Structures are given as structure tokens and as C-alpha cells.
Amino acid sequence: MVLLPLLCLLPVLVFSTSTLNPTIKPRVTIEKDGSISVYVQDEINVQSVDIQVTILKPFQLHNLVANFNKVTSEWWIKTPVNNLEGVKSFDLAVFYYYHVENNHQPERKLYTETIFLNQETGLQPQPHQISKREVTVLFDDFNGNQLNMNNWMYEVTASGGGNGEFEVYTPEATNTYLRNGILHLKPTFTADRFGENFLHNGKLDVKGQWGSCTASFDNGCYRTGSNIPPIMSSKIISKVKISHGRVEVLAKIPVGDWIWPAIWLLPPGGTGVYGGWPNSGEIDIMESRGNRNLKDGQGNIQGAKQVLSTIHFGPGFQNHRQHGHWKLKTDGSTWADNYHLYAVDWTKNHIKCTVDGSPVLDWNTPSEGYWKHEHFSGNNIWAKGGHDAPFDGQFDLILNVAVGGNRGYFPDGWNNGADGKPWKDSSSTAMRDFWNNRSKWQHTWHGDDVAMKVKYVKMVRYN
Image (cartoon, rainbow, N blue to C red; front, side, top):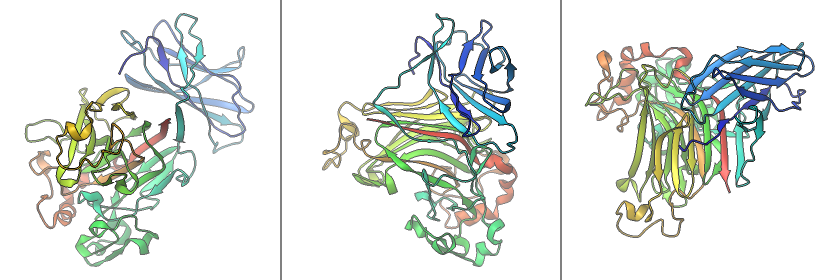
């Protein structure tokens, strides 16, 4: 990432009720000691204000109750001292929560402004003109009691995602729900919903149970007995599509053995301009593994201390190619311990995936195009496309939490400590073995820690 010469702050301002109408831009200043002060104008009937300040790089999170200045009629907070030595720019996200008189469940109203901080003119915020080529096509801060179905659709299937995964994706409220302005995508046990006997003698009619089945491959619409997935989980797909743009997801990923969270882009239905996967491409903004102790055969960390970004493409499954990279936590924590901003900047010239503004995958479009770059033979299926084909089509945003699988994402040769891996990919009963050996992993699943939690999603189209 190229650091800007100015100190760049990006506040996202959330007001609690539709009756509040912020008329004066908030003020943000950097004090000499490195602390950050935020000032927001008072509104009628406001009793108190909570302000959450998130510094995205280096990551810090401050939750503070604002004080009221009667002289200036402003609510204000001052963060603890931040070490800004050597930092030329960083992003700052600020959520404002107004508590209004006689309103115990305040509704939030969103007000956004991008601010550049000019250090040479008294640190007054200056408006930043967004390029006309950028159009925000989706912003969802999950303010409400249920998922906004104008923005999202549910995946409903037991197909296993093409990876032999061990979950059935459902629209049930235990798997996808909003709480305090945060989206939760949570895996649960099928036996808790239908009983243990259902996993041995039951019949899972996906459409009959939930009204639709969105993917029929790999017995996605109907399963019986031991072929019924032991996990129920959530996968949602944006109704908005983009071809080149920027995606931001502020999320806290899950922790728990064999959990597989993902934030990714895929052509609608998995079949784009150039055909089914991987012909039309895939962009994985973020993937991880929920295991705390997982290491590969060489002893390298592969669990929740690591996030990955990858692109997939190729003319047919047998010619599948992928290019990816990863980022490790080196301070003893995991990526699941806090919220982080996962993003992609996708143009004709590059695909850049970041976490908290730091590069994970920094990929430039090959000058000769993907076909020649990968030395594919035969007819070029992307010949009529753009220079960056197959990454020139329309893509959906997908958020999901998978579990397990038998096609290599959790290799048999990896080391998961004393608990080991409770199934073999080559076994015809891999999914059943996973469930029958749940004593080896169930103790690592704790409440909502197994859910991917999302504070907001933003999709910007480049025109």
C-alpha cells in the first residue's frame, strides 16, 4: 500500500434515530501526545453519546462514553495515547451511538463522510471529493432485527460447497441473525435441531424443509441417514454484483476446530461468462481455519493465526490454477480475537487483498494475459474477454462459515495437537467420522465464538 502524504482518517458516523439530522460535520484532531479527539454536534433530546473509535492500521479499538461541552454544544472523546511515530497515514472508523430520551431501543441513522486531516492548518477536517468513477452500490451496517433481503439472499443446500464440507446451509434464525447491529453467521449442530436419530435414520428434504434448494449438485437437495450433514450453518450472497470495484468487510472471524470462514467473490451461481468453475474465476478476499493449534507437516502455523487471500481460474477443473498469499499474527493473538477490515481493490490491472490496510495478496494482471501467463494450450476461452479475463465479469459477494470437508482444505498430514484430525479425506465415511469423533473438537467450540461476526459490508463499483 502506498502511504499518502497526509494523515488520512475515514470516519463512519452512525446516528441512533431517524429524527436526528446531523447538520455540522464532526471534528477530528490529532493531539501532540498522539491521542485522537473526536467532536460531534449535539442534537435535540440526546441524553448521552457512546463513541467507538477503530484505528484500522495499526489496529486499535477504543469504546468511550462522550463528555458534553456546554460552551461548544459538542459531545467529545479523547482516545488513549497512540504511537504514531513513522506513520504517515491510517484509516479511522468511528461509530456514534446517540441515546435519545424515552427511547430504550434507539434506531440508528447512518451519516458518512470521508475526511482528510490537514496537519498544517490546525488539524481541521477537510472534505475529500470521492472520484466520480466510484459508486457505492451496497452499504449494510446490519441495523435492524433481521437480515435485509433487499441486499442478500440465502444459500440453502446440503451440497458441501464442492469441497465435501460437513454443513447444510439454512435460512434458520439460529444460523443467521442480527444482534446489536452485528451480523452473526453461526454453525450449529443438526442434532440439536432434529435429534441425534435424524443423523442415522432421517430424511433431509432441503426444499421441503426450508422452501427452496439453491444447489442440487452432490445431493444438495436431498440426503438420508448418515449422509445428512451434522452441522447447520450460514451462507449469504449479495444481490448486488460488481465487475471491478472495492469491497470492505469489517468482521471478526470464528475460532473453533475445523471451522472454515470465507469472504469471497464468485460469478452468479458459480457460472459466469466463460462457464462453470473455475473458468470464470474466483476471488477469495479472506479465508481462515478456526483451529488454534493447527500446523502443517513442516510445522508452519495454519490455523486462526493465519488469513489467506487467493484467486482461482483455469479452463476446466483439470487445469485449475491458483495464486495466493497469507498473513500471520505474530504477537501471540489470532485474527479471531478482534474485528479486522478485510478488503479487495479489484481493477483491470490488479487484484489487491488487504487486512487492516496491510497487503495479503498483491497481484498484478499479467501483461500477456492469464492464458499465456499460465501456458494453457488449445482454444483460449477468454479470447473475446478483456485483458484481465476471466476477472472481467460480474461477481457476487459471498459470506459463509463452512465446517470440515474432504477435498484438501484440512490435509490429513497436518498436526492439530493432541486431538488430531477426526476424519480422513479418503474415507467414504469422512463426515460421519467427524461427527462420531466430536469429543476431539466439540470442546473448542464456545458459544458465539464459532460465529463470523460482521459490523458492516461496503461494495463500491468502479465505472
